Amino acid sequence: MSPDAYHLRGDARIAFLSSGTPEARDAHTRLARRYGEAPMADADVIVALGGDGLMLQTLHNFMGSRKPIYGMNRGSVGFLMNEYQEDGLRERLAAALASTIRPLAMTATNVEGETLAARAINEVSLLRQSYQAAKLRILIDGQERLAELIADGLLVCTPAGSTAYNLSANGPILPLDAPLMALTPISAFRPRRWRGALLPDKARVTIEVLEADKRPVSAVADHYEIRNVTRVDIAMDHATGCVLLHDSGHSLEERILREQFG
Image (cartoon, rainbow, N blue to C red):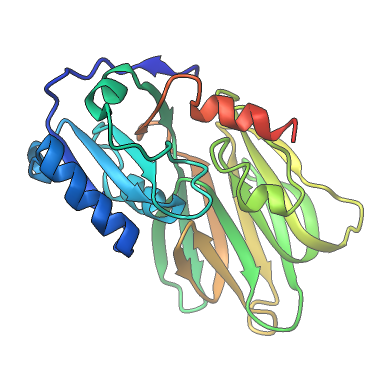
C-alpha cells in the first residue's frame, strides 16, 4: 500500500522511548523537556530514539495496537528511522506519512513435541545449529515443492524485511505494497542453482527439518529464537498491523525503492 498522511493533531500526546545509549538518553531528556511527555498508555504517538533494533522491538511491543510509531535515528544504520532533529517535531509528526506493516506468524514444533508461536516484522529464518548443513523439506499450501534443500538455512521475509537479512542472502527486494513473501535459501549446497521463490502473501509455508537429531536447526522470528525445531509453519498475519511514520519524501516505500538503484 502507498503511504498515507496520518493526520495527527498538532497537540498530539507524545511518548518517548530510548534505546538506552548515551545519545538516545540525552535526546529523550531534551525532547521530553521541550515537547512534554505523556504516559505510554495515553499517548497518541510513540517517538522511538535509537536504531533499527529499537524500532523492531517497539513495533513488536505495540503490534496490533494501531498506535503510530515515529523513529528518530540515534543508532547506526537507521534504515527504519527518520533523521534526528530537535526542532519542529510536532510539525513533522502532523505531516508524516503512515505505512502499515503486516507481520509473519510463525508456529514451530521442537524435538520434544512442544509448539511455540511468534511473529516477525522482517523475517522468519531457519538456521543450522552445528557444523553440518541443514536438510529441509519445503511445502507450500501443503504441497511439496522441494523434497530436500541442503543449506545453511532458509528464510521467509515480508516486503518490509526484504532489504534486511534477505538482501544479504541475495534475495529479491520487494516493493512495500507487493502482496508477496520472499522464500530465500542461505548458502544453498543442493540444489546448487536454486535461488528461492516469490510467493503470494496468502500462501502457507511449511518447512520440515530432515535428520533433526543429527543436523539440528533453530527457527528465528526477528530476534526470538526457538532451538531444535522439527517443523515450522509460516503465514502472513493479515489481521495484525503496525503503523510506521516517516517524513514526507522519506517513506519506507521510497527507501525500499532507492535500495534497488544502489
